[in-house]
Image (cartoon, rainbow, N blue to C red):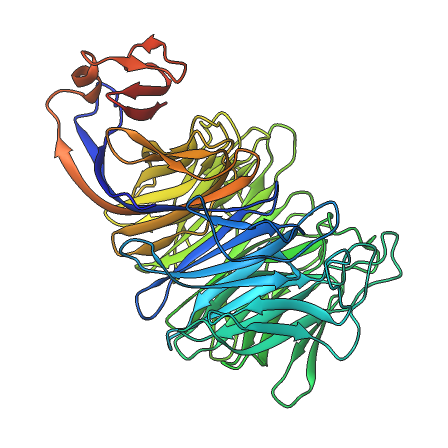
Amino acid sequence: MKRKFTILVGALLALSISASAQLAATLNWAHSVQGQTTSGNSPISINKLADGNYIVFSEWGSKSDADTEYLHFDNAATSFKGGEYTGNSYSANALIQKTSPADGSILWTVYSNYGYINSGCSHVSPTADGGFVATFEARALVPAKDFNNKKLLSVVQADGSNYDIAFDTELYVGSSNTEAANVILKFDANGSIEWSRVLRSKVLTDRTNSPSLTNTSLNTLATDEDGNIYIAGNYRSELYIPKADNTTETLVCGNTAEWSGDIQTATGELFIVKLNKNGFFEKSLLTSGKSELSYIDNITYASGKIYFSGHAKKTTDTDVLSLDGKTINASASLQTMFYGAASTADMTVDYIKTLASVANSKGSMVIQNKNLKFADGKLYFTGSVNGGFAEEGNTEAFTSNNGTLLKGFVLKADATTGDIEASYCFADSKSVSAYYGTWIGDKIVATGFDMNAAVGHVFTVLNKETLAKEETISVCNTFGSVAMIATPLQDGNTFVVGNRGKGETATILNGSENTPLAVGSKTYWGVVYMSYALNFGTTGIEKTAVADTESAKAYNIAGQRVNPASKGITIINGRKYLNK
């Protein structure tokens, strides 16, 4: 299903404002993806290839029924069948589609049909030759049809042929699945696999919650113009990385001797690893000193530098935690956000900045770093937090969410010095929210979600210099509770985004009226991808926007007539406004 509309969206403004930033946008196209299970359907990311086409990465769920088409695209059954799973849950499959930027039409499809994919630790990054690198955290499911304890994953390439990841030695088999491993695949421009590498971790069998089958979280991926690959995350035992001389580089975690083995607990140490263009180990950055936990959450590459963000927590206040001799001044009582830059030539750290954590009303703080973007010499951090950030050594927060619900945040820093220049927190949201990325133009548009079902997927328009909020716009709602957003793509003025929800239709912002997009079944989660063309201008207004709309009929989401200036969501002339 393809739709194209022109829209102009304005915000209700206070009487004192004499000018309004206006969001002019065109909905280029919208598509839906839905697997036929109650879980396992998630958006992951959108990337642009060297040839100008897009790579759209999703996860979709399947079970074992030979008569069922498991994947629906635009509400139509496809021939793609994922892993056949005979247990009580489902198999989570990778879906990678090369699409046209003009209308979103599919050029080819790659997907997995054996092995369970963890979408949170699976990524795609384009390469200069027109292909891309993909990483999957995968494990084999014991109740899967044709289970083989030496086979981890099977991928159907664009030409329809299968590519298996299997071993000479057996995988460690638990009660319902095998050990997890991280698979790195290099695809060419035609969707064929050129090579694969597997990073395995030591399975811990001596813990209270033994065995620990998932011991490495590969949280993020980047590539450079020479084809080198950068991976980063957190590991909790030993991580084995293949080298070009057929030996193995072993990274040994030093802070989990007393870890119970429960993968739901936060522990372990961070890593940043450089691989060459063939996927073999070259260099690593590891922490020294003692910590309760340290994670790298995001990395991005630009002009010979890797920029990174993460979070850490020390064991005691006297512990010293550092990376390449640069101190990570983490708290021993609260999770602490840090970020920095490293030279890719020798993998040395230029700087590390730590933000002081300010506890919420319950004395705690959780940080979720969703995305890191480099643009025009600036770094843009997005995520969610239920606490506040302060400058290192200070206790007064420069951005804060005092409540216990997670709220979306955006931070802007100078990429050379790391100094924070502006910040914003979506603290006025009445429910859980998060931001997953930004579009950078004359304004900044942060894309994310508000779990209020009537709000859903949002674009928040921010002043480029100050990050002051100008308006928040719902772009996909009436689709259940939207609580997962794809890592977005900015392609010039185009912003390609995606979100998960549940319902037969999703309501997509397209202008003066919201348009339903058929997704499939209200029983199953589905994914909607949308391409918007964005353009900003500033228009002088003699009369206020509120005064101009006072003669128009305004309604709340229950259909009741309200004052156009009422707080909350109002509908005026078919447009939805979120008035704070």
